[in-house]
Image (cartoon, rainbow, N blue to C red; front, side, top):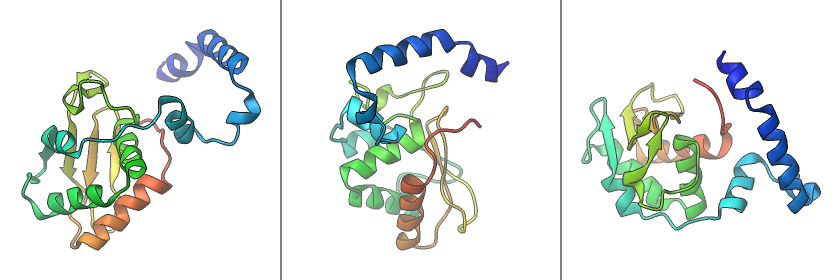
Amino acid sequence: MVKWRIERGVVQQTESLVRGFYEVVDARLVSVFDGRELELVIAGTAEIDLSDWRHNTEYRGGYHDNHIVIRWFWAAVERFNNEQRLRLLQFVTGTSSIPYEGFAALRGSNGPRRFCVEKWGKVTSLPRAHTCFNRLDLPPYPSFSMLYEKMLTAVEETSTFGLE
């Protein structure tokens, strides 16, 4: 039922949207982009307000704003360039767009839902995301360098769409 609703339930609408898109944009021009890059091209890039992001983030599983892993997390985000920050946002929320009202207005599958970092996983695991819940499962890495490398790998090397 879910597969039908996602794939077949909107076939006509999707085909119409694609036809209209290609009437405006030459297909050869967009064929060089993957989905993530195309979204950034179409939606543009916004400078992320790290203070707003941090202020509107919640923590679970034993993490809190002053936990060493969370301090490393924010240090890593500060070290990222803006494109990497947008990719992190897209990895966790499913979109690189920031609501006009800021991070306080982030929405999940069931309405308003703040960005969340939850303690989960073994230190050998990559961070994982739950886009419906705007949640990042972040293992308790033993060092900043390990956290930074694992986050960078997760953000740069993983698929941007999946169903959980």
